[in-house]
Image (cartoon, rainbow, N blue to C red; front, side, top):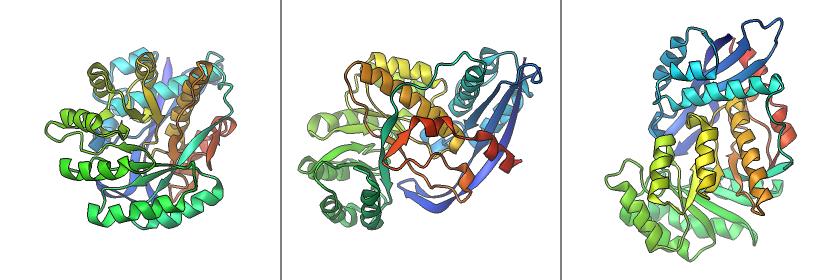
Length: 353
């Protein structure tokens, strides 16, 4: 039998995050502490995080809290816990899976971190003209892949900044544009026409996942323009991923492990389909980041064995929280596997207590 505890958090960001969904000032969720009921004899402990994003299609924070409360503090095993959590609660299920995975590592059943020692990370640039200064600072730190939040202001205001931003970047640098689904078809076509003539790595979620006819529109844009498109908000859960796999999506898949219910199983289906993956943060704390980054390293190991090269991770978000002990590892242009292994979940747990 396992003992399950959870603690709620509401953690302000250091600065308001501006996206097409509007200003975002704090993160809400739960940390999970998992320990054997006979902890004195078997001190295995696992940590997980439940970090819902309802506008991505996950459960709400209230629904996640209710699901955790419904476990009544214990479970026989992971299967028992998942059987008592609604399938629609993808963030809750992902947190439980992560907690059990770490507990199994402590028990000696988990695999060591893979041999890939570090992975590249994309720097997250703020919306608007602030991206120019942020890009300069990131370049000094050694970043060569950048992700710019667009769709926050009108295209007439943002498009002229595109060339200014590209002009700041050295040859060989890569720029990703993330619209967070903000554009209508006409605006998306305008941006994609501009991107066609410029060195853009990919354009992420040009139209909203809940737009009428969004799937047909996204597939049409991918066929009409040579720019690589990436799905993000369209992949809010395992069911969404299965639907896009069935549709034969050949662009990039930006996956957020913290939202995917049973991320390992979802990842296996994507790998089998030869999907072009980018692992991304859901702006969770260090606890959820550890679980996501471990999956990213495991994928990179398989990818390297087949002669491939993983794309830069979307985890260049820290420092993010006003409470520094909530932040993940200081990545710089690379995140090292030893820094992932050293993430201290208990420190944040104690802060919340």
